[in-house]
Each structure stands twice: as structure tokens, then as C-alpha cells.
Length: 486
Image (cartoon, rainbow, N blue to C red; front, side):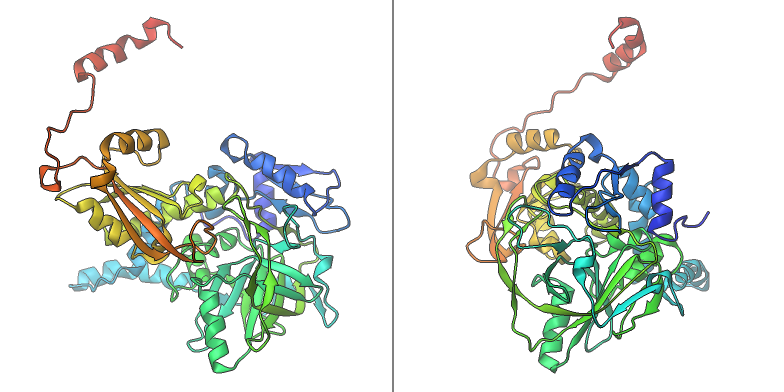
């Protein structure tokens, strides 16, 4: 059976059938009130249900939040029970392996066909352009949320921000927040490490304006892939096609030289002029749980807004964890594990806890084979894409379950001598991190929590972990039901 959902409307119907969505009829304001409801639901065990606000006060367009906020819903959205299968599929397509024999060439053909079948497809028209507003555009007619009391205004938080490299023409789709400045102006929060920012600086150097499109919704994998840490040369919509095993349908923009999802709900078209002065953006209540202060960012001029006749406004709340992004981050962690294993075969598992805002802690388990192996793995991780922003990397033996924070703390506390097992380094840091003296640059800590060897300076006899004998465990297993313990 193929990928089952054509758009957000299809997915909402499926979530209702699965009792994974709550419709809220009470008129609630996009200013703070929708956030408060969503925040309470996100902090329920398991992430709570998806929320469909039918009557945002003052607007005709329904608002959807917490759409991906559980393991079950992110798996439904991507169409996989085991998300690592996506990573293995990507690995098989991307690995630079030259077939040695004719038979191996034949074996490679199905993978190449899957890649070809996943290439985005240009169509002549799409539902997203059923309604067109050009000229007198007004962003304030969309139910864009102000999430937290001290936010600098309303922010689009789940828009797929589409740009093209001004030199190569390669498309990038990123998940960047956008602050409403006026009815036809937005501030684009392009962090220094992001591809959209690179496109902006290239356009500035070339003296060109940069076209931008912001897509809301579409096939359910699309908002997720905008957040995925893909290499710059991998098109996010191609990645979505690989996930769905069918192409993402795109339509040409009306005022921009860009293509965007034909099945999206709403698209905002416009451009950034690098000659414009940068504008104040923020404050913004961020996924760290703290407000990001005001900073200078580029301004986008909005030229057109297109939408379906019956659009939904999809948004996400970020703030003190856990929030919906816990499950988006978890999906990325699972999907990219095979690619990390490709580069580092000794890695067993890794975990980027949402409570650590994904970039504060990386717990990794390895098959240790030689002295200093833990540090080698940590150095290598710091050289892999956005893993370079990790602040603390803690390395464990292969039998430690790094998904279990209790087991992590037990091994960390018992196995680490800080004067021997801790390294302090310098490097790039997530720009949202407020602990460093400089924005985007600061200290890193590598901690070796593995069993220590004499070659690593350990002078005593490492103790054995307490384990019950297998014979006794087997006997108690056999009589357990008779013991009357529930």
C-alpha cells in the first residue's frame, strides 16, 4: 500500500478515526490563549492529542497545534512504524558505493528507481492557489499566534521557508520562525548555521534580491523535513519523496521564481532585499524555555498570499520542554542513526534529550575496542553537520540504554572521575544558547563514562556489575504467576 495522505486534510481525518485529535469549539484568541491550552496538552504523559481549534477568535481559518506531538502521530505522519527504516533507505541511496559486477549493478537498480520516483514533480495547478491575494496583502488576516506574554509580536513557527542558492539554484527548505512586522512585512530568523542564511549572504554579495516562499502544511512529512538536518545538496522535498515513495507535487509561484507544494494550505510569497537594513526581531519564547532577546535579522517583503478555499493554519508552540518538538527531534534522532552508524560503525545508539533542547546533551553508547575510543567517537560526532553544536557529549558502554535517563545517570555518576575523564573544548554553539559569553561560540564538554582500562590511567581493579544468576532468574520466571504479585 502506498503513502496514504495527500494533504493535511487527509491526515486530520485519519487522526480523528484513530481518536488522536480533539476539536475545540470554544472561541479562543490566537494571542496567548491557544498557546496556554496547547502547552498544557503537550505536557500530558505521551504528549497529549492533536488540537483543532475550530473558532480562533476573530478568524475564519481553523488553527491546528500539536499535530506531531506523540510517537504514534509522528509515525503516522511519516508512514513508518520503525523510523530507522527511513534512515536505512536514505543510507542505501546516498552511500557512495560503486557496483563491482553486473549482478551488483542490477541489484542497485531498484534503489535508483526509488530515487527517481521520489524526485519532486511540477504540476500545472494545485489546491494551494485556489484563492489568490496580490497587491493589498494583509498578514493580519491569518490567525498567526502570539505565543508568550513577552514575545515581540506574532510569529509564524511552522512555515517551510523555501529559497534557492543564488549561484547553484539548489533549493533549500528550512524551518525558521518569522515575526509579523506589518501587514506585508516579516522578519526572518535565519541563524548563522542555516542554509537560508547562506543563500541570503550569497545574494547580498551578488547584489540580488532573494525570492522566498513560506508554505504551511502539505503532505504530512513536509513540515517535518523542513526541520531535518540534511546536507545542503539534498533537497528536503526529495527527502520527503523518498519517505513517501512518491514525488512531492509542486506548483510555480505567482510572484517568485520558486516552486512550492501544490497541496499546501497557505503559501506566502515575497522577497528579501539584502540592501535593506536589518530589522529588530524578538524577543521570542524559544524551545530552550527562555526568551531569545532582540537581534537584527533580514526583512521579507510579502507580495502575495495564496491558499486553499478551506485552509487550515498549522502552527507549533515552542517553550519549556516537553513540547511538540520533542517528537520532531526524536524522529530526527531515529532517522539519522543509520547515517551516524555509517560514519561511525562502533556507535550502538545515541540520544538527544528534549529536556536538553537537543543541542545541550548527546548520550552515545559504543562498542569500545581500544583506549581513548570514547574521545575518538565524541570528536567525530562534533564534525557531523549540526552535531557540531552539541555542548555536552557523554559516551557510554554498549550495554547502557542511553534512552533511559535513570540508567544514564547511574553509569555517568559511577564511571566518571572528572579530573581524568572530562575534556573541555571550544567550538560553535547553538545561537539560542544564552549561557556562553559570545553568541554561537563557547565551551564544550566531552565525558568518558565507559568502563576504564589500565591504558587510560585506571590503576585499580574495575568492579563487576551486580547481576542475578541466569538459573535463579529462569526459576523465578517460571513461578512468577503463582506468587500473586501484581
